[in-house]
Structure formats: structure tokens, C-alpha cells
Length: 67
Ligand SMILES: [Zn+2]
Image (cartoon, rainbow, N blue to C red):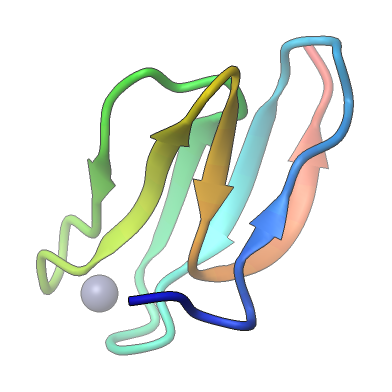
């Protein structure tokens, strides 16, 4: 199952991305190079999953938080 709204984070540098769940509106901050799936704390929807070296973001990206 592929979602068109998935966004690959191209930056080689590690950072954190603020994501809003499109189902329940909860905001979650995930590591851009996460190696494990990140689920919404509100509804359990998978918001980010590992795809090689980059995280596959499936929620609404609110912004990138530089370290
Ligand atoms: Zn949610």
C-alpha cells in the first residue's frame, strides 16, 4: 500500500520532524532517520516508518526541527 502524500526527507543531516496526524490531529515529533515505526500517540496510526536510511513520513509535516 503506497500513499502519495508520503514525503521522503532528503537531508543527509539528522534532525527531527514535527508531524501532525491526519486522523486525530495529534502532534508527534519523530527522528528523521528513525529505524523503527513511529505511531500516533492518540490513535495509533503509523506516522513514520523506516525506509532505508530515511524515514517515510505519512502524516502532515509541520516543520523541521534542527538540532
Ligand atoms: Zn492520530
